[in-house]
Image 1 (cartoon, rainbow, N blue to C red):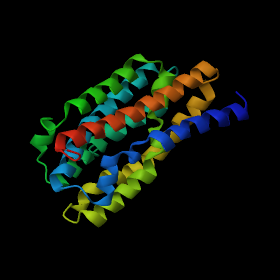
Image 2: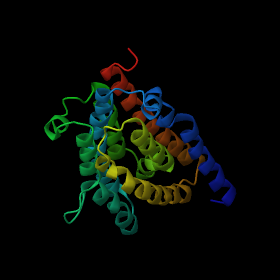
Image 3: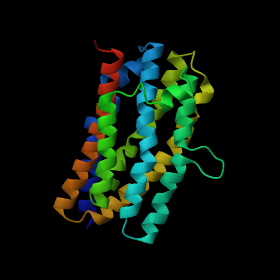
Image 4: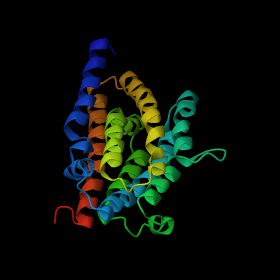
Length: 231
C-alpha cells in the first residue's frame, strides 16, 4: 500500500475519535467538570470495572487469531499489562484500587451488583466481536487507544481538582495507561495500515473502530441512566 493510501486510512481512523470518542459524552463532561455526586462517581467506576476485567479476555481472543509468532509475542504484553505478572498488579487490580479510593468495597465491585444491564451487554458484545471477527478488525477496534492518553490525563487532573475526597493513591491505574496506551496504539496502527490493503478491508477497520467507540459510549449511557444523572 502506498504512502497516500496509508495517510488516507490513518486520517479516517483518527476522524472516528474526533467524532465519536466517549470524551464527548455528556456523562464524561459532567465528570471532568466536577458535577457528579460521590455515588455517581462510584457508579462510573463500578460499571467501568466490568469493562476493565474483560479487556484481557478480549486480548486473549485476539492473540489466538493472530497470524504469526511475531504478532503474538507483541500482543501478549497487553494480557500481562492487565492481568499482572510476577507479583506485579495489573491494570484490572489497579482499577479495583481506584474503586476503593472512591469508597467502594472490593466485594461490592467484584459481585458486579452495580453493573448496569446496558454495560454488561455492550462489554460482552465487544468480547464476542474480538472472538469472532477477523484479527485485523479486532486489532482495529483497539485503536481507541489513539485517543485515550490526553483524555485520561485530563480526567486525572479533573478528579484531583474537583473531587478532593478521592484517595490519590487510587489513581495509579492512569499512570501506567498513559504509557501503555500509546505504545499499544502505535503497534496496532502499524499493523492495520500495513495489512488493510483493499478498500473493503479499510472500511471494515473503520467500522470496527466505530463499533468500539459505540461500546464505550453505551457504557456511559448505561451508567448515566442507572445512577440518575440525566433523570
